[in-house]
Length: 360
Figure 1 (spheres, helix red, strand yellow):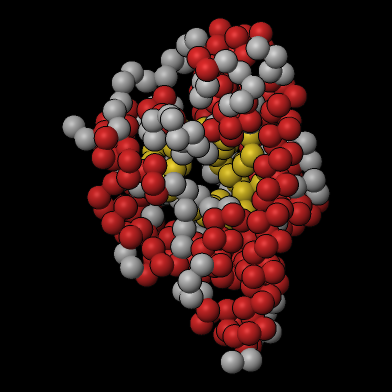
Figure 2 (figure 1 turned 60 degrees about the vertical axis):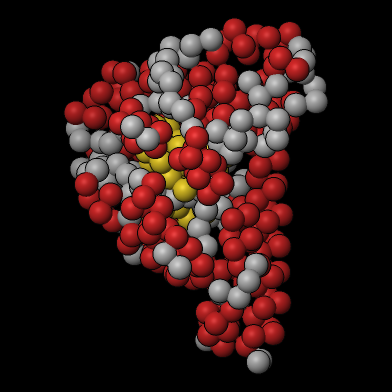
C-alpha cells in the first residue's frame, strides 16, 4: 500500500498548504486530488504574496478589478476568493462524502487584525458572506485577542480555521472558545453544526532552537510539542462537556498539523509527516513535502493518545535552557508579525500592478 493511502486508512486527512491560479488553470490541483488523495487546502498571506507576485497569472484580473474601482485590501480579497471558490468547488465531493468534516479551503482575515477582536469578528463575517461557499473556513489567529473573536464567529455560524497555535495552552484556549460558541448556539436554538479546525504550527519550533540545543535534540522539539497537544486534543474529545455537544449534533473541531515541511537540510524531508501520523487529524503540507512523502515516505505506528515520550523530551529541552511557555508566545508573535510583513508586501505589489495595468 502506498504511503498516502496508509495515512488515509489510518484516519488522517491530507491537505495542500498552497494555492495559485496557475495550479488551478493547469490542472495541478485536480491531479493532486485525483492521484494523491488531497481533500482540502490552506492559504495564508505569504502564499498569496508569492502567487500574485510571481508571473502574470493574475494580471488580467487585477486590471479588470482595478478599472472597476477596486483597490488595496478589497481588490486582494476578491482575487483570493476567486481562487478559493474554484478550489472549494473541486473539493465539494470530499465535503459531501465526509459529511462536511473534510473538503475545506481557508481564507485569512487581515493579519493587521491579529490583536483586534471586533475587527476580526467583522472581517470573518464579511469574508464568509462574500465567499458564498459552505466549505470555506475563515482563518483567525489564536492570539489572546483572537480567542473571543473565534467564539463569537462560531456562535454567528462562521466556520473557523484557528491559525498560529504553538502550544497546548494556546490550543486548549481555542478549543474552549469553540465549545462556548457551540453551547451558545444550542442555547439560542441554533444548529450546532459549525465547522472548525485548530492549526498547530510544528517546524518553527525546531528552527527557533536549532543553534541553541545539543545535536541529539535537533528537530525533536516540534514533534514533542505535537505529542503534548495531541494528548490534549484526545482528552477534549473524551470529555463529558464535548460528548454532550456531540450528542446534540455538534462536529468536533479537528486538530490540524501546519508547518510540516522540513526546514533543516540535514533532516528527512518527510520527518514531520511521518511523526505526526494520527487518526482524526489533518496534515497540511507544501507541494514539495507532499510529493516527497508520496515518493518515499513511510508510515509506522500512529501517534500515542497519551503523548508518548513528549513530556520526557520536553524536559530535556528545559534542562538545555529552553523556556517552552515563553518560546510559544514568542513564536506566535513572530508568526503574526511575519504575516503582517507578507500582507503589506502583497498589498504594495497589488497597488503597483494595479497602477501599471489599469492604465495599460
